[in-house]
Length: 44
Image 1 (cartoon, rainbow, N blue to C red):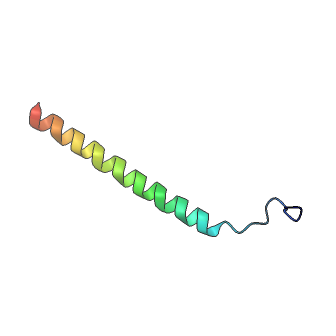
Image 2 (cartoon, helix red, strand yellow):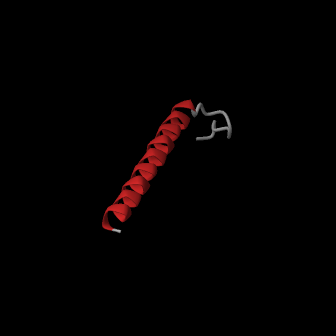
Image 3 (cartoon, one colour):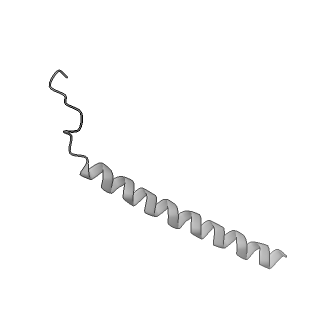
């Protein structure tokens, strides 16, 4: 642990994973919102 220097770690894989997660989350929220709007129109 003594050799650790902040800012030297390669985090490209973590950034790719986070970007993929955010894309998935955005699409999921959009689909849920569309489904809720459609349900409101059908039951309205």
